[in-house]
Image 1 (tube, helix red, strand yellow):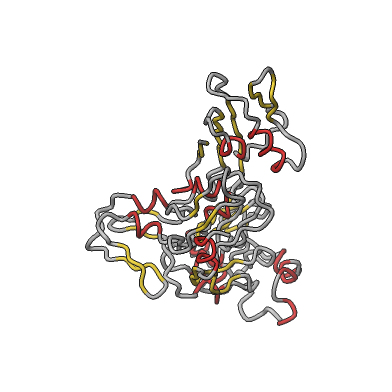
Image 2 (cartoon, rainbow, N blue to C red):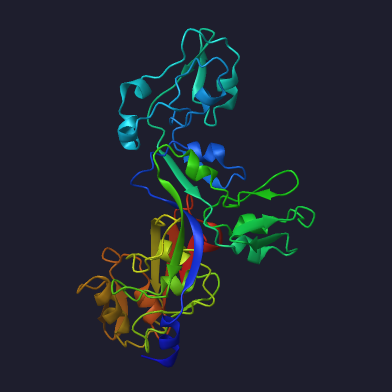
Length: 358
């Protein structure tokens, strides 16, 4: 073990974050309704379908829509409550006065007007949800220092903001947005989302990482390529795993989100980033036939390999290639070029939609 690695093991980086337990989250979107800064991004693929966020019942002045407020028994907290008949069959009752507050306030337009009365449209909205990860990349990118990190939360000075949009561009969970005079979408750790969740899926907890990467690592080098603070370095010739300088790490979780084998165990806010497609090319005019790409791929594919040597030059079987990038990272001649295209709906910003090796 090198002296640098030994020093890194003695240190760790920590940060308090909003943690979402997806095994409990029902994707109703109620936490989004309570967030004062809009730091929770809620997306539905099927627009106009109720997600049971309960906002309609909360704004109704005559209680014409049943609300779960004060009605959930301790044993029914969680997913079990969603199966109760009173909730699945909720509708607008006859005492509705047609004030249209439910219609106007429904965030996904799931309330329609039929025969002069509000009607709740139900179905599978196929929702997804993500919240600000407090990575502080917005702060680092702000050219006027309008955004700062104080007492574990993002603070904004609107007088310094010039609406340049840099914070929006680099935001990995895409919660940042520009308002009329200043940006929104950064978490201020107020805890309102935690208190509002009927499933108990949200909590505030401290996330720590000492830079360790598990043995599931396939030496692809993706983490070092996407790290926005250059906290991760990797030399596949001399190092068994990437090295992490925790003094530079900001716990943005991009490396963990992009890791194809979940070898970086710090993902708290960001979901796994889905690889949509990949393209790989070999410039055989530069190839030296060293076969290091073959050895690297054997690690990634657990004995199998997509690259192979023919007539002293490297070729790649694209049907076997999983697009991890291990061969391109290892190649000393840099003759292998890999283009990875990711889905950008949930994780974007500085992570980028496209990652290119080398």
